[in-house]
Amino acid sequence: MPIVGDFTMNIINSYSLNKLNELGFSGGTLSCELNLSQIIEMDYPQNFDTELVVYGKIPVMTSEYCPVGGSVGKCEPQKCDKLCKSGVYKLSDRKGAEFLVKSDCVDCRSTIFNSNALFAPELSEQISKTGIDYIRLSFVDETEKDIHDICSLYRSLQRQGKITPNMGDVIERIKALGFTRGHLQKGV
Image 1 (cartoon, one colour):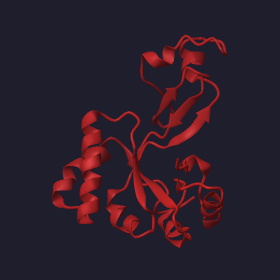
Image 2 (cartoon, rainbow, N blue to C red):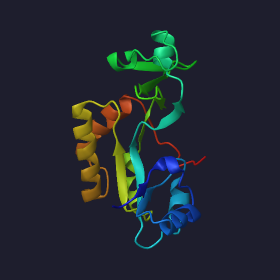
Image 3 (spheres, rainbow, N blue to C red):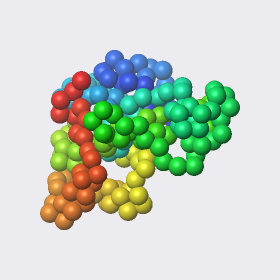
């Protein structure tokens, strides 16, 4: 069975790629903290598939504390009332940005996602020249229509290699929901 490392393994340089290859991984998803220049400069091992997240709300924090159960439900640790499964919960920062909170009821761990989705379709042509094998679209709370439109957009980008006028409506609608280009152009 192929083993592929996720972006949470912080695959950030050629050494990481080569080490995972030596350990028997068949591929890995590059860190979301890399910029395009760093991605291009990497030494990609033979027979090792690389992937890059090009769309999605990226986790910004994993918490062993459940803010939903602890704040809203007044639960004690290990005594979960599963309140987190009965609604959509978000944390707000001082600027009013809302960060989606997804909790699991197995161990009350919570994942807090960036308030804006990583979305940079205008960089698709550059991304296709980096040497990566696959792109990843990561969906967390998108509507069925958004998922369909985003998948269609990236399929069209791969076929045509550039943004065409008929893609404009989808791009503008997704950007209006809030987006970031992440570190693709600036790095960490």
